[in-house]
Figure 1 (spheres, rainbow, N blue to C red):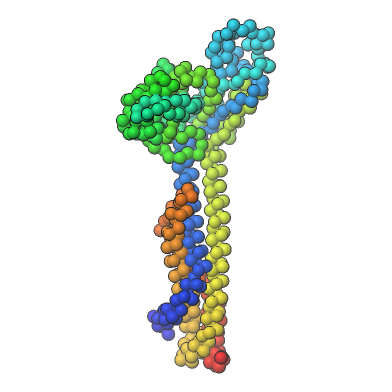
Figure 2 (figure 1 turned 120 degrees about the horizontal axis):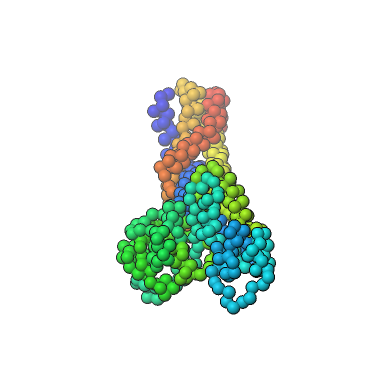
Length: 444
């Protein structure tokens, strides 16, 4: 029997049992939709991770210190006080003695080299620490220091003062954080050195304050009641999973913020960029050594962007594997459904099979007929599954899950469906083709 005749016979049989075909294909429909959604959610998750970490350098290492009000060692190099204070009697944070008489521990603590002090004072990382790390840690391409605070901002189209995140940064922060300008220029080293009141607005902050990104450029905003000239606006970055969100932040020169807004009441983060991403662990160990030499007994929080990105990617991959496993189970259930229906079909059509064999149809013809029926049912189920996936995508996206549908995912869903139907339909087709004509004709 020719293939065209077989296909015509298959189509006639399926068209006469439309409802049965749809019910048989339910498992394939669910499995196909699941496969497509798994691939779409997995792709969306990878893109989400990439976007969230796009402002992080793969070789970036963040160093910070959280005060626990415990005593710690002072800086030994140059007898400097914590936070880069002036040695020889000046109080930390750059302040005077405020009329207090220093104790003997304070006095000798400034001259001794051991750095064992019992007074509880806050350790503040400083630009001096940043410079030491740049000099004494090998394989470092760049170093910066930054901090954040929250304060009131006025100006532009704001009807009342709003609370915004203010970031004190160095001029190289933009390069290190992979930021780019949509208009104007980023803060310069001269702005920082002269403690000038300039600022750079994040994309969202500029739109909120001025109503337009370009209207913000070269205008003035009032941060903590002081006027700051907007030197530029950053391009939109979207959501980030680590550090500050550039879109909603206002950036000012590091020293300007210390002088006019925060004083030394900050907890800065030093970011070290490893020249080789494969040597991040070695750079971290060298950073710990330099910091231990400067601050005895102090415990710093050190994290690298590469580890964060890897952890996020692994989490996304694990979720995708779980979803794939679920889709495979659904396909197996759907395939078993097709196999059961075909077994029933073979039983019902035993006389038909006997007549076809008596008319000269070979074992191969009968096998192909039932196999084509299984493939057609699974193909119909796969197509319906792809349509279901498109239909439920808006529902899934309403739960803040990123879904990236693709033609590749649709083709894979169709392929999985057809393969499942073929595999599970083969045995019933083989059983049908193996029937003896005389026995089949006598079957009631």
